[in-house]
Image 1 (cartoon, rainbow, N blue to C red):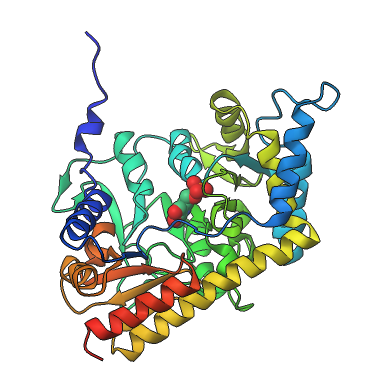
Image 2 (spheres, helix red, strand yellow):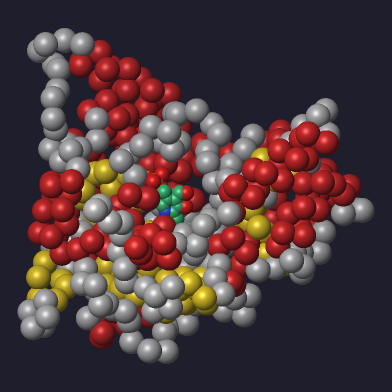
Length: 408
Ligand code: PLP
């Protein structure tokens, strides 16, 4: 008899996006003439930069010629891309990472979800609340938690993000071995300073713990005082793995290219306390279960680092950031406390009421779709997330509608 992994039965059904879709459909059916503006899901809306498209086309043409055709590439990614990443994303910011510490993949979501495989079953895990759900669900699937009780899984340590701590959680009260951090944060849009991040790096060093640092939104950081990589913090190369993605940086959500940095100095321990380099374990896992990102996609990603690509991706992010600034300004003018929208594409709005009630109000009265904060965890209750990923015209229209709906 084939048996299932019963840990999957513990997973709380995520009603968030299905619930949103259901409410949007109901609204559309009742108001067929009303145009809905979506500022909910965190997907980009602008096309790929011209430099990436040109490189993509050229690489596809190479695949059509016997002389330039490529079969399987290196599982870890082509050197041409890994070397550009090192030069532009790390060396330029004073972080010494080498090309063979970069693992190119088809998504930060997969890497964030897969990495837990290389850790022991009985580790103590700290996850943020509100949270990007992948960190939690993949550990539930792996059997590292008990059942869910009132929205929280037994056995996980929840790092609470609140208005009081500015959505930068305090260190855990009891020791943990694995820590998930994400800055600029999804969903809150909060950013972390170097001093704040150093507290976590120091904690990890002291406890021989590991930080999984999700920097999928690093390209939105424009304030030079804020870190774009955890490796800007002294000692982080011993205790942190970093996840990056071209999804939001260059509009690759549908094209798929990302990378994970596993420094060779980063250690984890066996039952007897002997250190093992994570690099070798991840390399083994990646080589066994992954066969590389397609050559044309890696060529398109490499073009991000060309002079034209750098200008074009900057302009792309600037456009979204102008939307973010406008959303935050307008919501604050309406009297709401907000986090994010600076150095981040998400604006986290304290609705001072039930998340879903505020969601319904914006949908029914303004025809604007946001995301209810309660869907990201207990600490998200009372908040909504508004995303800046849309055209300027749509964001302006959405804010005008919200203003009239709220009576200003
Ligand atoms: N990490 C965070 C925090 C995200 O919000 C997202 C996407 O929304 C991802 C990772 C996924 O990135 P990718 O498209 O590279 O899988």
